[in-house]
Image 1 (cartoon, rainbow, N blue to C red):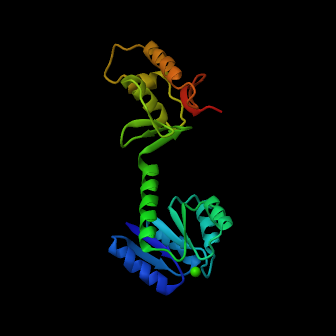
Image 2: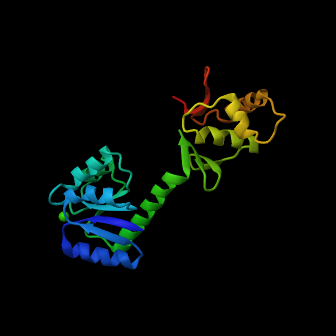
Image 3: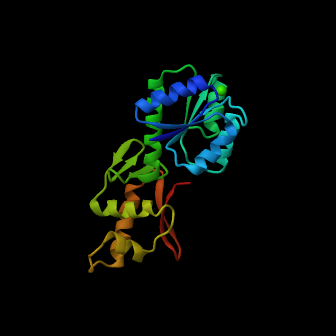
Amino acid sequence: MRLLLAEDESALADWLVRALAQSGFQVDWVADGRLVRRALRATRYDALILDLGLPGLAGEEVLLSLREDEDPVPILILTARDTLAQRVATLKAGADDFLAKPFEVEELEARLQALIRRSKGREVSKFSCGRLAYDASTKRFELGHEVFTLTAREHALLRTLILAGGEPLSKRELLERVFTGDAEVHAQAVEVLIHRLRKRLLHTGTQIATLRGLGYVLEAVP
Ligand code: CA
């Protein structure tokens, strides 16, 4: 895994680069806030470790500009000024985690691993709508933290809708995707299945809406 470290204390940076390398992280180091974005543009990093007190451009400014650009890199903030107000401010500004100096390298590693795992999960395998989520790696639906069980057909329909990510799907499209290879099925079967699924989704905060002329869409209950 490849990390970018933005830290101006060279003794700390040296130690971190070596310690993290022993755990299999490849770490590139910049000591000036102005160099962070350039480095992120040139290389794809799994996470950024960002010191708040940086010369050139303060860590807070770096954080804000990255999130303004919707750069998805997970960011762990390092700071010597550990106050609750600052934690809240940096997390609100879009940081994913926060660690106060001095810290143990084991804790930094554990947090980085969790951060990277979460961000990868977001990227590839989690689709959500309201409280309902579909995990493509386990092929299961979850409601809050509970597994949400469905029949095979309901599951196929709901999966098709949640993967559409808010785009409406026509009855014909649903028919083709849910009843694949079943030539005898009529459009009515989709309606019956939608009806059943709507009942299952009652009180979940998620619903199947009908958009006239466009089809069906899964949405969070307003
Ligand atoms: Ca510093």
